[in-house]
Amino acid sequence: MIKNKTILITNDDGYDSDGLKALIKAAKTLARVIVVAPATEKSACAHSLTLTRPMRFIEVDDDFYKLDDGTPTDCIFLALNAYFDENNKPDLILSGINRGSNMGEDITYSGTVAGAMEGVLFGVPSIAISQVCKDKCQNIFDYGYDLAIEVVIDLAKRVLEGSFPLGDRKLLNVNIPPIKKSEFKGYKITKAGYRLYANSAHLHRNPRGEEYYWIGLPALEYRVSEDEQMCDLSAIEQGFVSITPVHLDLTSYSDIKILEDWI
Image (cartoon, rainbow, N blue to C red; front, side):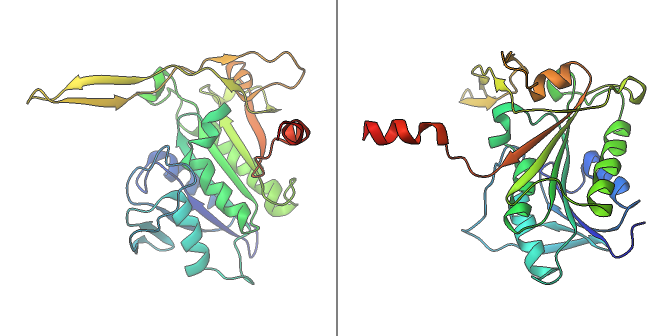
């Protein structure tokens, strides 16, 4: 245990998910852990904040709360208000371990990454962790969360015993390949890949003959980059843990002059 350190944890798969339990197990080897997680699954809710209804904390265990119908962003926002203050912030925020990947443009959909986004908005070092799955995430990978736990402990320890490597409003997005620990090749610092999306909406009929749509999961297909910087999808495909620095400034700086000329 690292003395006087606190880790705040959330996720988007819900308070009872196996990935969250694995993350808590890893974090508790290093510091005091406070968990605030959604009461139900909030996958692909992005960086959404609930403004139209009240929410309440429901105690699950010591330092463990589920937020009634809250998003990961709600969890971090309200946890920092309820259990911390400006002079007593957590030393690290961990969001995950997500069941499935968060790579390429999926970062913009991800509730897992959004939990880390909310953390860095408040000046707290934050890491999002996702476990890539096989079979389009319908069946969890064959190897459990052992490698993910090892990676979390390593990265969190580097932050708690040293410093966070990024500046303001920047987070780490970490994806773990679905491999055995013995097959782990190390870390790759990556850029977000260029995902190739297809329409994964499926039309069905219920027993009354009424039509409904169910959005599925697209394959992890991507466009191979021609530059030297490996992308997250390629790193995972090759058996590396992908670590992508993400910043919240979405400005396309290279297009400012083009737009000025255009307008």
